[in-house]
Image (tube, rainbow, N blue to C red; front, side, top):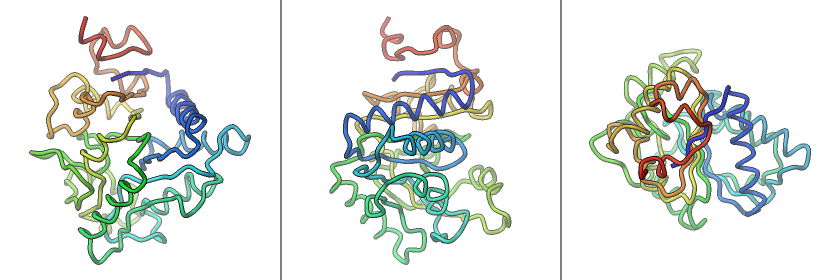
Length: 259
């Protein structure tokens, strides 16, 4: 695992956008896994800016989003479908047919999960997966559990997640209790992973994910086992890490562990 510590949110967002840009330059047909929430918005704004300046071309890029609330559709402003078009897709030259999103209005949630997994398989998997991290260590909507879920699945959202995410709903009573999420197994099959974290409130989750044991009770800890995972953190998000982590802005965690 590689760790990059930045001074602030702007630098974190710029670093992430530069890495995405590099991947698209190397592979114009990149299969890109995307996350929602406040954390990646700065990166998305930077990618829009780069696209408008001709620095990055999304013409042949294929995207898969990580998750969606059950019961919300494209017109619901709290849906992740709506979020992605507002914060990225409407501002770049991506083809609509190359955008893959889970259907929160499906009448057959399990069937929708199987459809999505098959679509990822047909795309030969995710080349680069962007992740955020929840206060409880979840990635996607993979909540703390006794096992790591493998494939895209139906999720019962934890009370912690519902309470935190309810701030995005004008009527908190409409906060969904369930969601659809790409599973840990599918995330770990991505060729490369970038996780972003930028607030002091995420520091404990980051510390557990990096310095703690690999366990499903902290879903993000599984990234310790990925051969090419990078965490881009602000100094606030990294404040709980051991002193050695704070001495360098960029280093290999694996190399450190083998010294």
